[in-house]
Length: 260
Image (cartoon, one colour):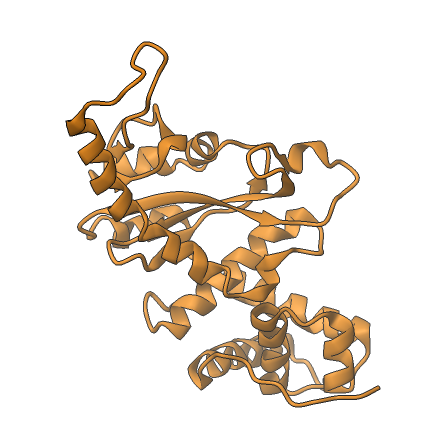
């Protein structure tokens, strides 16, 4: 098998953060010997999450077994996920924003046995629904646990309590037409209806201004999906939440913001 050097577009700060968590976990469990030291295990996990390298490629590159590569990656993801902020904690930061941007995204998955709940009619694809909150500059602030792809964005936001939390904190929030009827502090563009076939000039101007603001939220989703593992999850959909939470922690460490 041929091999070649590769790079991971992350700083050493992120690597050291994850390595320190792994080192502390091993010390707590009193692990005596591992095939990889904490730094190499952290590098292994980052290669999987950021570059999307498969376990087979990782095993060959790090000269370990495939089962060992899987175990090391899952251990690192679980350690990171435990440090992820829940919505209540994230709201302490969100309430200080000038305004927030709420949007949903579909993370594709492999087809599963019970595939109907995961099929998104909007995207015509199987996946999981993740709600994303961004700040006024389009920077990723928080990402929700994953729900089946058939769940509508508004239903997902209500299920997670996002709309209620934003309204209670009195944070002006911009969202797309999928959140029509959210009320509270959520603002959506005007929508054409059968009894109102054409929007007025004022409504069209409001929609254009709204779209310019909301477009910045796409940056947060793009930032989330720079982690190549999210291009298509090839694991049980129930593990999607843990992966997203781990990536959220790593993103904040890399950006040097909100790091635990």
